[in-house]
Length: 397
Ligand SMILES: Nc1nc2c(c(=O)[nH]1)N[C@H]1C(S)=C(S)[C@@H](COP(=O)(O)OP(=O)(O)OC[C@H]3O[C@@H](n4cnc5c(N)ncnc54)[C@H](O)[C@@H]3O)O[C@H]1N2
Ligand code: MOO
Image 1 (spheres, rainbow, N blue to C red):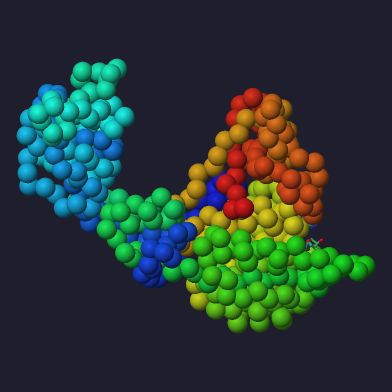
Image 2 (image 1 turned 30 degrees about the horizontal axis):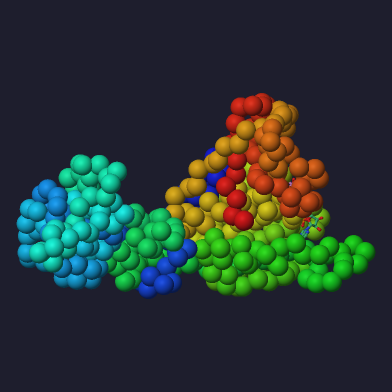
């Protein structure tokens, strides 16, 4: 399967999975996925309010000054009469009859005469005669939204501004997708958990940061298990998992110590994707277990596993959460990047003043090239030519 098609396929397979929802308080909503449409429970602003500190004025100057109006004061029933003004605070209700708000730095108070003690407002020198214009510095009722308007759509990630928008439109709780449970199975007899690897051993590249990465993607990590390269133990581990999505690393190829394929066959799983034309990462598999749960098998090589997780794991999880498929980005290249492989090449790059430049050390068993990268370019078969922009992979880190 081609890489682009694989991305769309995993997203669709994820979206087909059943989803549960729950209520959360707004204070717990950031980062969650909205499950239902959010409509405004009030117009915004819900009353005509002043956008500036100054005076609400009516008619021509000089204006005889009335009582101040502060934010939080109930709306006044008294219409502002021509020739009068009232000091007004930002956010306070604008009285009916207001022509506009004269900002505090644009007016000055004078005494009309020695006999009249009521302060009078005039425009300061250099203030234009037409300032304020009709409605100037007044936030009209409903200018941001009316009552019962669609504000947020299901599937959107609740970013900080979206949660704030839900709050100001009157919501206290939101309905969000329940995070699906994901289990990590890390395969490999040679893989050790801590310390300096001895001869023949490698240090586990995934258990320190994959849990945080997965939680950041919006799922609940139900378990992380480490397994030797053993068919029976692999079968037992998959069978005993209750997670809606099992993600494995290693054992995906056809070598003498790779048992995943045999385990999936023994468990009567359906392999939905058996390899993707991508470099690195081509041995990746997506399977549906007999009970309908999904399993994503990442290759063991660290660069390959990371880029498969970003390419396919993230869209799969987005689908499971009801989120849309994140579109690819674009970057301008400093130089051409060749690709004679017939597969999509994922190339880590750094930004330079001339454009994106591939990093060194991008062997699929390596990590240095990705660790120093600013992004990952998606180079199609045939290559990519500078200075044309090339697609980039949305990264989950
Ligand atoms: N005859 C062929 N052999 C291989 C092919 C091929 O096309 N034909 N593809 C190679 C590629 S590409 C990859 S990727 C690997 C995928 O193999 P597996 O998924 O079975 O992974 P393993 O063999 O178990 O491990 C590969 C490599 O990664 C290291 N590893 C595994 N787990 C971890 C971990 N948790 N942390 C760090 N490193 C890990 C493991 O020690 C191996 O060095 O197949 C190639 N072979
Ligand atoms: O396809 Mo492998 O995944 O290059 O390392």
